[in-house]
Amino acid sequence: MEVKVLNVSGKETGAKVQLPEAIFGIEPNDHAIYLDVKQYLANQRQGTHKSKQRNEIAGSTRKLYKQKGTGGARAGSVKSPLFNGGGRIFGPQPRDYSFKLNKKLKQLARKSALSYKAKDSNVIVLEDFSFDTVKTKNYVQLVADIKAADVKTLLVLGAANNNVYLSSRNLKRTKVVTADQLNTYDVLNAGKLVLTTGAVKVLEEALAK
Image 1 (cartoon, rainbow, N blue to C red):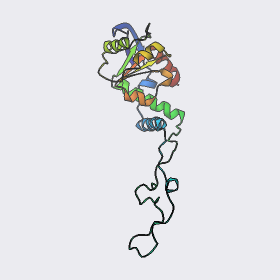
Image 2: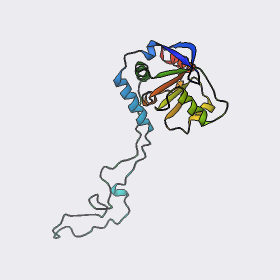
Image 3: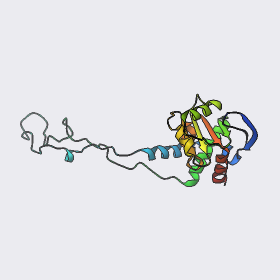
Image 4: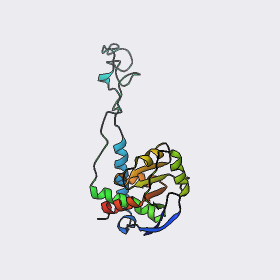
């Protein structure tokens, strides 16, 4: 798949880049995508939720009233889950939600997500660039020039660039990552995938095996 390369002003440079079919042209595997996104979201969870059981509630353990003759149900403690302020039955406890997936499955999911973006013509390729200073205005202008101001954008750089990252950090509808940090969730969550020529090379080396 051949894509025209744009500069930071959104104009064609005359150059073209070939997006590898092995990465951007495969038959997408929806189940692999599901598992990879599920793992990503599960790994974001802190798992620090906690409610008190009856043995953790502060209060007296004396019997509230005699066992028989009251006409009501027997009760042994005010900390019973049946009473207001009592412990919670089967409440949440701290746990680790993360789980592992095979490396090849994660690669398949990533290639499937990239193929979906290419199939829908939502891939933009920019020549490698940098900002002289950290200015959000520069990044806003870049997004506007490539006609992606009205959608979520994911900019993938070939290598870390602090000025570009910091210029985009205050914007809600955009995200900047390096090619080695690219994940399936971010690709699917973006309306437009913006790749630099350096990022295309890194992805080809990592995924086109």
